[in-house]
Image (cartoon, rainbow, N blue to C red; front, side, top):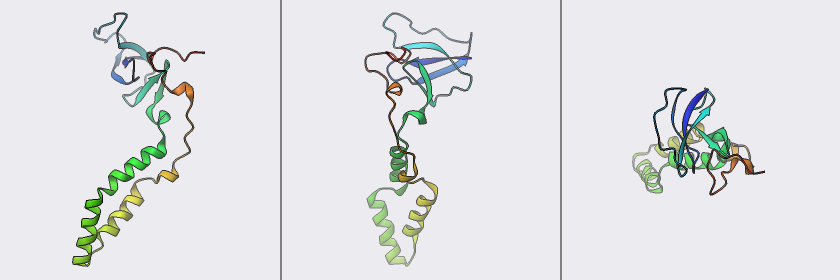
Length: 135
């Protein structure tokens, strides 16, 4: 096991260290961060929700993540129109090549599994991430 600082409201993990290597943080009754024991394979890509550590990908809608990645990869409409214009002037295929590269390298949102939200994986507002899911 290791120790990690957990942000109470977001469940984000900020620091991970070996047990015994922790540094002092405020731990009063109103503390919003806390040292918690976590599995050895825990990284900053994990989150704590209702007292349980999850990989961030387990908590996100992958269809949405793929859509954002594709939107960024395609670039702005202005950039795309500029590529099309230059292709028309120069007789090149820069835009078509760009679109083909994005389609080949960035997953399509429709290829992601359907997302079903699990209420136990949604942080209950007003509770700290380390507090277990209310029964």
